[in-house]
Structure formats: structure tokens, C-alpha cells
Image 1 (cartoon, helix red, strand yellow):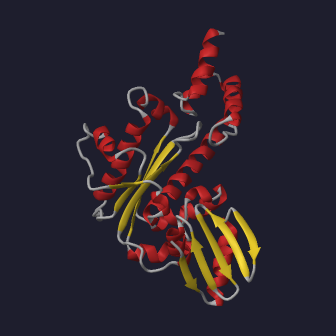
Image 2: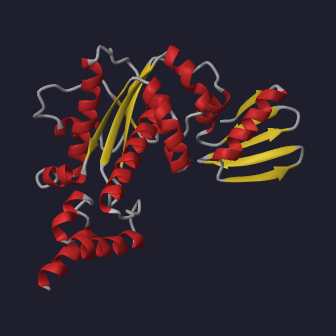
Image 3: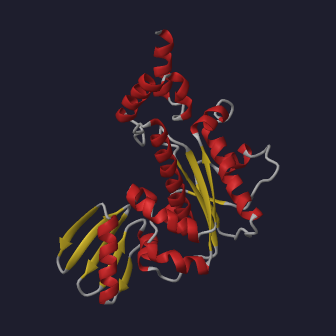
Length: 287
């Protein structure tokens, strides 16, 4: 579906600045400029017309143009760190009503994967200060202990549930629109929580929720902000650069870390259940 907006020159210039900041690709087209985002192409014409096209066109139109049909109030949660060998798992749930939305909409919140770490470090403190939220940070040592008897999705389910319970305990009444960026089917999610004393129900589970709900986008950004702060603390403690994500660089970093600090410190900085870590530990045990 396409979304078309007519903008004043001031708003057109602001949109161009925002798109230049976040777009993965930009090119000149006749009478305007075109930008490539995640599943969305935005064409801004010299006349002031802005055209949003693609699967995520509604999300970007709402958040870059700030139209008035965002469903409020809403709650949303997301997690980061599950795809990173080093560093914690962070989950954050956020509450957004009309008043809060008015305070943050000019930040033009988008998919956190489209944002650089520098952008996250700039936006994170603003959201933490403005948005009611619950952020949980599960460090590596605790994760490795819990992971012995609980799989990753079980751990995430409990963290999401705890975030929503924290919001409720602070007097926030969870609205009808309460969303989790889906990482497992809803029946599995509630099965993971079957032994919990308190369970938050009535949640909507949807994929790519970060691109559809501003509360989920806030949760993702604050989670990433918490992740980056924790990584900075780890790097300062060990005087060591921990690469993000996975792959060749993390394999090299693992070997270097073991050489410098030994196997006993490994559980404090990385997820031991990963295959490449297990392989390294097996080799070390044979030696």
C-alpha cells in the first residue's frame, strides 16, 4: 500500500534530513530524491509530495510524518543480545499514551536495526527519561547458569513477563494493545510460563512488531541502549574489545580472551551454549 503526503517546505526539509540520516541508500530521481529503508522506498519530490511504498510504508509514514492514527495507548516489548556471542540479553517493555507520544514522536523512532550504535546512544537516554518502561539485563554469568536448565525462548518468555509485571506494579494498567515482537508461538510462550506465580495474559504476538508499534520500537531501542552500556562496562573491566554479533571476529576474540584471562573468566563475558564456544572448550580440555 502506498502513502502520499503533501508537505510544507519546512517539513520537506526536515524529512530529507531524517531520511539522509537513516536510509541505507539514497539517489536522485527526476524532480526529487529517493531513499531506501527496510522494506520501504520513500520518494520526496521538490513539489513537497512524499510517497511511501512497500511493506513497511505505513510504519515509516506514521513515524516520519507523525500522522494522527497511531493506536494509543499501547505497550510493547522486545529483546536484544540473543544474536550476540558476547554480552547480555536485554528485554524492555514500554508504555506509550498520547501525552508520551507527543513528547517522543519527533525522535522518529524506527527499526533499531536501522540505527547505528551512535544513534542508539543518543536516543536511549531521551527515551529512558521520557517513556515509562521496565528494562531487564541478564548478564552472561547468570544466563549461563539459567541456560543449563532453560532454553533461550524460556528465558526470554520469563523476562518479557517480568517486564510487564514490573509495569503493572508501578501502577500502569496495560492497555488492550499490548504487543510482543514474536519469537515463538503464543501457546509455547504461555507454556514456558506455566510455573510462574503471576502471568500477564491478553498479549498480541506478531512478527516485525518493531515496524508496526511505536512501543515495541521504544522497547528495542532501550534494550539496545542497555546492551551497549553493559558492553562498555565489560570492555572497561577487561581492557578488551568484544565484537558484536557472531562470526569470524568473535571466534578470534574468544581465543584471544582465553589466552589473556583463561577459561575461568569466559562464563562472565559470553554465552557458553554457542557451538563455537563448546568447540573451543572441547579443544582446551583435550590439551
